[in-house]
Image 1 (cartoon, rainbow, N blue to C red):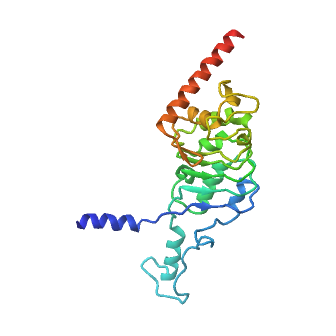
Image 2 (cartoon, rainbow, N blue to C red):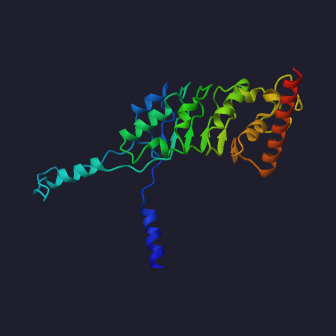
Length: 256
């Protein structure tokens, strides 16, 4: 029992880093996160490193430094626990180019343990003006598993390219896309009756398939899309439909 209590106490004592929150910062460029302070849960900026309790001179320690200087040195060398999430929502971003490098430099600036880009698992880019994704920026976030892209400028014609980019993220299991122009071209993104303009469900191709079905069929590791769980039955049906579309596409190429 004492061993269990010790483990529990140790877990509770381990500092947990809150998400780096740069939402509502009026950012026009990813690099601007290096010049502003993130929000905290309390709404204040992150606290500065602790200062010595007293500014009065104290006796030197064995290291030869006054006690106050030892405290200051220890504080400056202290490493923050690595955040696993970054919020960039509700800004004016039109591109994510350089995201990985900015996150890495941000970790160095904040004295975060390790390479921050390798620790990030969740990126919230919702409510921006993004129309295209930078594959290289995302590939350098190897543990990215949740990506919020809702309320941006992704169009239905960009969907095939978008899926090709997202398929390169092996750990991705949570994705949001609702509120993009691609959804405006559909009757209901979550409905089996949703179709592209002038298309029918049986027409095949990216314009004729509901985007949910197309996304689930292409990104086989997804567990959640648009805050709705991807069921096993839905995944199987989407894969089957994707296979049919590929078969029809090959036949069309052979005929052509």
